[in-house]
Length: 112
Image (cartoon, rainbow, N blue to C red):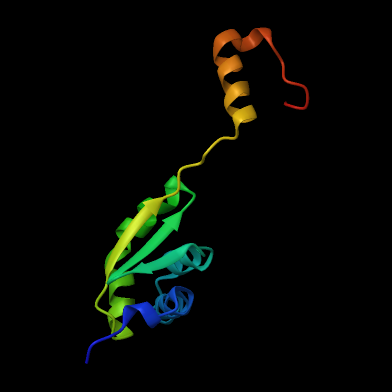
C-alpha cells in the first residue's frame, strides 16, 4: 500500500510521534518534541525545524525513535533536522556592528 504524502498533515503526524514517544517512555525526547511546532513534509521527508541549537543534539540522539514513530504510523519517511537561522533586523544588525566597533564606549538605552 502506497502512502500519498501530499495528503498528510504534518502536525497530525507530529502529534502521533509525540504520543508514541510518551507511550514508550522516552521522557526527555517527548518533552522536547512537545514544544516543536515547525514541522513539514516534502515528498517522503519529514522535516523538523527548531530555533534552539541545543535542542538539535537531543533530536539527533533520538532520531531513531522518531523514525520508529513514523514507521509505527505506516510511514516510511526520512527525518531531516534543521536549525532555523535567526535573521536579525536591520536595526539589530546595526547595533551589533556598532557594539563590535566601539565596545564599552557606548551604552544602548534600554539595555542592561
